[in-house]
Image (cartoon, rainbow, N blue to C red; front, side, top):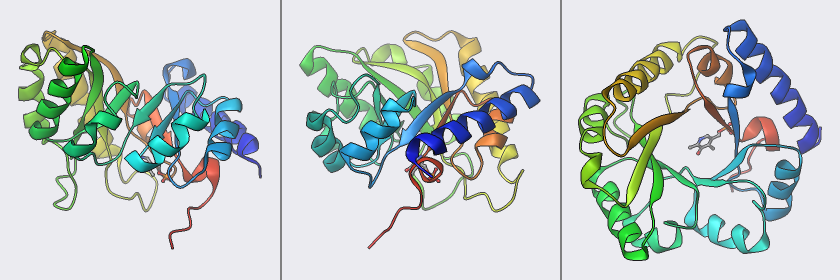
Length: 231
Ligand SMILES: *Cc1c(COP(=O)(O)O)cnc(C)c1O
């Protein structure tokens, strides 16, 4: 199957999942997780109508962006981000989804202020409390959202989560529901510099569950591009 055919099939499944949950399919955006796919393949996905692209590695972003890989669609950063690479990311991407620690929030804020811009961000939440993964606890995310007024170089636009690999349907529903509740709680506080407009959760193996539980953006790699070949 071509990338365009994969995306068409994915859109049909997204729509069915939204309707089954009583949701409007247009509420749910498709972010192509483009890691390990070159600029030509990313362009194919953009032409076939994904809503945005998400890069994991600064090196790949820096390679593909000058080739016009994302042209016409927003590009997001979705991977682990080191503070010494922020010059290549802040102001270069529409959204940093993976702000996963206080040190990174502070560094993104400083870099954005120095560049004279506002960087949109999401907080990454380690919703299943997995020791090997980054991310705020739900309690930390809530508390820090209340302090966003102190960070005028960023705007908090929502939350992102990467729960454990879903082995069978339904496995991650409890984590997705926890994320939705946190998202609603933060939105209800009407904190300065915070607007909850993006709840990024769901990947190739669990996006239907994520949509059922309130996701507004799924990040999909394998189901668009096929399996990645790690060497
Ligand atoms: C790779 C990746 C995805 C997509 O994973 P698939 O299982 O291939 O759909 C989503 N989010 C992040 C942060 C990723 O790194």
